[in-house]
Length: 592
Image (cartoon, rainbow, N blue to C red; front, side):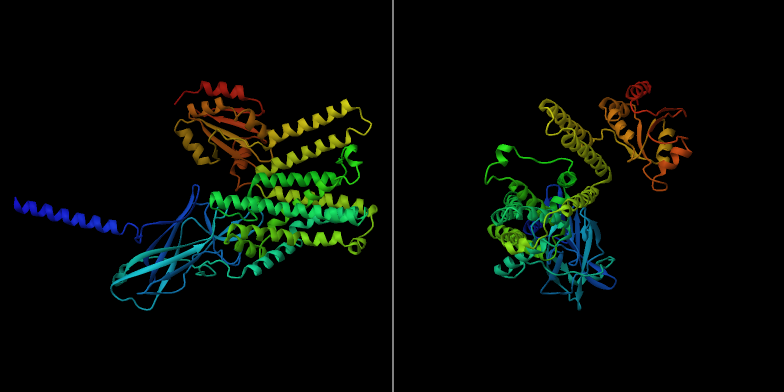
């Protein structure tokens, strides 16, 4: 009995000692315990450290794990600014480590046309040991730094230290791994740029000047020149004040940008990149449609007129709102090309106190606005501009085509299905502005004028709701797969094939009038019908449904909907409004 009691007591002491040891080390990461580096909403990235061997060379593996929408910049040559790439460095008093060996990176295809080298999700960085290992225990500190980004926002620069312990005498038993080296190795630790404030302000000012030669702003440069030429005829004072109004529009954009940056830093602990707005579908679509409207204005499809009570007043603000708006638009369009010096100045601003960051951002705006202020304030420069004439009208119309080209490019950066709907809506917008400006004239009766313009406005609203409102998929569509269809039929499961194509307008109507109905979606789920989207947008082999439509189902084209039954029969619909027939057919199927 005493022996049993002694064994129980000894076991309790051992268990208590282990618990005490665990309690002591709870804050010290073990080689396999992940440490979270960054997090934004549901997106995160964590890291763990493990002793490994690559071939005969011992070292440590820094193992990253994260969500698919969280990435790090991998290559300083494609990163938006110096020092934003991922950096890793290992230090230990017992062990000497070499430079980090980074794996092969992925390519991020940005919606604004930029390819960036990034690390995403799960990847491993190897840090080799230099020299021989002695017996005993080694304490290692790994410093990890960089800028983590999602598809919507970049988080503030970070630097974290992760510590671990290594059994140096057991290196022969460390896990063997392989790593595909990147073309360029990293290893630098991110630090805030060390240049002084006055140099950063000068860099920001130069960055603002560079805005004016960016290719992104070229489409609006002709409009700016035309505005300056037109206002120069009114005299030096009018030209100068219009120039200041244009400059105030530029500064207003950077003031808005600084305000958004302040809100994100104060309330959400994130930073904003200059290219972030162009990653937003709504912003890009609105900007593209604005350029379409401006092109229509260049073609004289409509005119913007102020009331006579305003335009006849001396010293009125006629044209000033347009100048401010043009300056704001010029600043927006220049942002997609803002890399290099601009990126360096902006990254420096993000690492400084908020008031200093705000001043830096505004200095960028001053640098962009200054050339226009000088041009419109010095009579000698304005007088050198070409005199107004027919060339200006032709030039104006030519600019309209340039604006349309830029609008198409912007809209084309969106997903294909969305871009196509926006292009159709742009055509409707053009028709509505044609109605607004060409169907009525100065002598048109007020009642008729109001009716025509109300109809144009109503058409634009209805088209916008129909084309731009996202279609919510309430049916779980599967991609076309012949084997999947065959397996379903063999298991007595009906299959509904929706043959469609992105360029098929009737197919879009069917998506709303038939498959957008909640009761049909519930019936398909109740009857256990396999829903298959047979996309025939392109040619086989990328689009196998195209081959099946003609050779297997003997149909000439889309749209066509086929309900395959397990007994070998089928039911087909070729129209656009067959919701009632489909509902009756589904109700007759046995419930599963």
